[in-house]
Amino acid sequence: PAFLQELSQALEHNQFELWYQPKYTVGDHALSGFEALLRWHHPERGMLLPAEFLPALEETGLIIPVGKWVIQQACLQLHQWKLQGNSEWTLAVNLSPAQFEQHDIIDVVCNALAQYQLSPACLTLELTESTALKNLKRSIEVLNAFSALGITVSIDDFGTGYSNILMLKSLPARELKIDRIFVKDISENSKNTKIVSTIIDIAHSMNMRVVAEGIETQEQEILLTQMGCSMLQGFLFAKPLPAHKIHELLQPEN
Ligand code: G
Ligand code: G
Ligand code: MN
Ligand code: NA
Image (cartoon, rainbow, N blue to C red):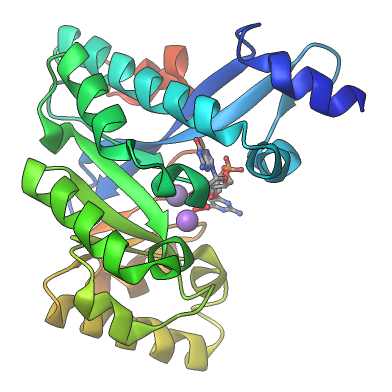
């Protein structure tokens, strides 16, 4: 129907945009980087969130060209930050299952990094545990290749999906993102708090750092910091922003 027709032309009509949500290191609240989040600027309906079009992108296979565009755009943004003197900022890109399964995914990422002469250390690739579990043997190979290049591999939305903690041991991932459904009632629900602190301990025993997402209150920040999270992301600190608004996050110069 009309929606799919519009979606299939959104790329050529330049209607996709990346927004950027900051990630901060615990304690000093230093801005360490961002997560890139896809938006569709629909001509009539305005700015649409992934929930409204990502399933259709995945079902139609359009996620492959759109996902390539995201990687390309993320690298262009890293390049621009570098030119602006922010070469230490990292950027995390979400990979869809179908995108991760593409045989040329390593080349797609490497070519984009090379095009903009970026250090692979600038880039984080986020994939969910269910994406990684689909074909574990291949996932290990691909993630090993990314890791060997110096790209940070991050397991996203941890705790949703299959939640196979043992799987973590076999995955060459440096980072674990605790899903915001756990963060949401961490202060009121002691059972959740216990689950999260156990996940963090296990991640640390596997030499992974832990990022908490969806932090909305100071209480959540304090608890997650005490539990050993390394990085924090959430509306308490900042919402996703378009590129031209990022300077508003920075300390005003005197
Ligand atoms: O942007 P929001 O903040 O509404 O994002 C919702 C979810 O959509 C994120 O958790 C992420 O998993 C997914 N998402 C956002 N941007 C992208 C993208 O560029 N590619 C893929 N595959 N998923 C994305
Ligand atoms: O995990 P994904 O990659 O699934 O996560 C990013 C999504 O989470 C985006 O849709 C973003 O807008 C949303 N998000 C980020 N921080 C918060 C928060 O503090 N609260 C809520 N409710 N959503 C958040
Ligand atoms: Mn993510
Ligand atoms: Na997430």
